[in-house]
Image 1 (cartoon, rainbow, N blue to C red):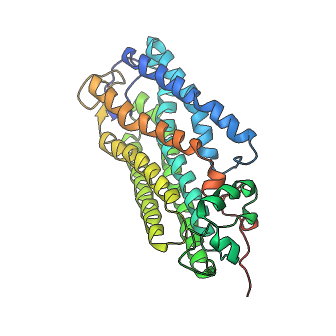
Image 2: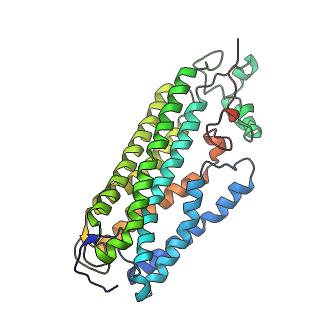
Length: 332
């Protein structure tokens, strides 16, 4: 396609891969490549292996390919104007933070549901310092059913933590609905990505694609605010350690930065992938904002999620909130 057209279409997030994109694209290719050994370690180690972070893992690997392609296109004028490649970029930039949001939903559900199960501690356990119990608990991290909650977790209940099936059911219903709801931004982003090539080539359904992209970003940002609220609410429950939900609040904040950035740039239009007009996302400041507020927060969120043992930290077991992975409540 030519460098200019007679129709207008939604400006590509991140702009076209220009020569100035080469250095940052190489940088993030390397940074994402550095996450691969961490992923391999998590998969190889049976105590940290889980299927909960599948979205985070897949996109960490995919980003190595995406930024390598972006670096190549930035040095190749013909590839730079490839509508198929640009459609792929637009779809994958939007899908990444949605997928990580879904992983956060699974982690938070597993952690909060786990806190609703009752525990009974012996007198010896209640007298054991929390640091000692936490250290001893490492041997049971591969089987959540054997986990003994540290006294610090249930100190407000002298005989352990009471089972709360009603709260458990409510949490499962809430996070189940959230998981279903997250299908909406996934689908709208996918459809807009598939249609983006036609929009670039002919301007067909440009307004529809624009609306779908904005809806996808807005819905994801809304779900992130909901998850942050749920994590913050868990502080008031006083049923478990505060740092795991606080950690997820941080992840949600990083992802929310991406959502806000996307909502700010998605309304822009252009008449060429290579346009340097205001709003076309090809000016130096536009490129800087893209890497600072879209790419960097996503990489940091993925790096943080992979840096912790999610299986132990969030009590996920292998597949998250599965009944077989949760301790049965004690019966009087």
